[in-house]
Amino acid sequence: MVKNYKNCHQGPKKLPIIAHMHLVSSLPHRSFRDLAKIYGPLMHLKLRETSTIVVSSPKIAKELLKTQDPTFAARPGTLALEIISYNHAAISFSPYDDYWRQMQRICILELLSAKQVKSFGSIRNGEVLNLVKSIRSSAGKPINLTEKIISTMSATTCRAVFGKVCKDKEKLIKIMRKALALSGGFDLADLFPSSKMLKTLSWNKLKLLAMRRKLDEILDGIIEEHKENLAKMSNGNGELDQTGDSKRKGNGEFGNEDLVDVFLRVKEW
Image 1 (tube, helix red, strand yellow):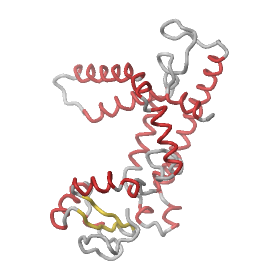
Image 2 (cartoon, one colour):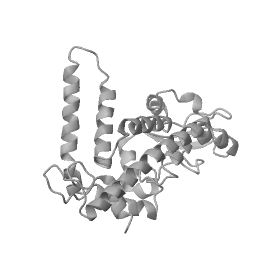
Image 3 (spheres, helix red, strand yellow):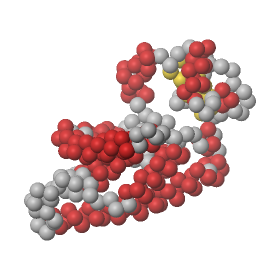
């Protein structure tokens, strides 16, 4: 997104009110490809009130995303992402500021360390094996490979994040997938940011808020159960892990910390 588009590289002529919206199809990446052939690898498009630049050159993309990374690191805010990411608290959608840098530090040290990633190896291997078995059992029949891969990724993520404490896994995955589908595009309110009325009356906003309430209920239960289990472990009253060792370190499937345990520990910093 760009705030001052007067000095941007020229793009196609725009229409009143809708600007360049008529040039973007349901497959926007194809529309951008076709437009780039005419207007070059760097062009300005205005989606109603929202100005954007479209980059179609690896060289320019490297300049923006690597050389000038701090300038372009922030993501544009949308109504859907504001709701689903709890006012941009998630690192994926947080503005590039001190909060983001602190979250990045936590991710590098705690969530994405070599030791932590290695500890989830058995989970990844198990879910990939389940995927292969599922595909093999459907030999000779048409399958939706995209759906199967998404299901595998969702199951792997749930096991890594919530460990053995996830009674409502299927319900949680279903809600998250619906929410991400709704947040994958622009709402009318995003294209007319000056209109407070559109933001207030947005139908997507109502649906996302309802989903977030359901999500909160599930996540609150998971967090409370994690806290209870950790309290029992600290008192020596926890259950035995798969090796028969009563000294479990967390709620992970193999007695290690899952990601919720890590977040709860980091919260005390």
